Length: 253
Image (cartoon, rainbow, N blue to C red; front, top):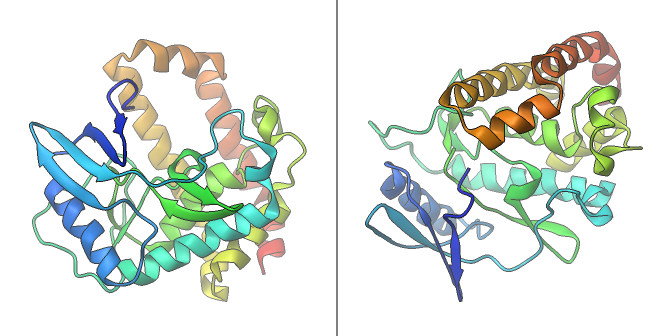
């Protein structure tokens, strides 16, 4: 979404700032105060842009390299989210902040979630997930919201026909990989029983966000959307999630 507007200058990343960037920066500082170092450090804000420290490491981009789709990598993503949530849960929510709603948990929550833990927003070092980047979508939510969002892209939670469109996903077993992610995070039995339902909620929120972007008329986004089957693909995905729910649940528990 920020294509062409993000620049690295040595150890600093300069990028467009959200209207609530000051609150995001305070949150990033608080994360470090509570022991979580897997996030950029805020450096400054000026003229509608923000400066953050660059986090060295490897970030997987499409087509995702083989190392990023291993079960070891997936386990470490779950562990990273757990460490992030442990720190975030200790940070009081600031009142009256207009947190992003695009991908936020519709039920809200008492802590801030990343809300966009996709493959491109995780930095790896030595084959393990080390840091989260791009906190634009941070918003109050349930920890399970971040796990469900990660599952959509890291497992991935895609029907076979859609997964076949992405070479990086061919041959992956989503049933097994959802269990690997849950184990890596250390999900409780109660959370495991709820995870499929939250993944369903994530797809509803994502679908609404896509509809908004289509209405905004981003030409490249519209073209990519139709190249991947349009709403037919989303209908098929949601039907598949409902049909496979019992299978995934049995593997999780």
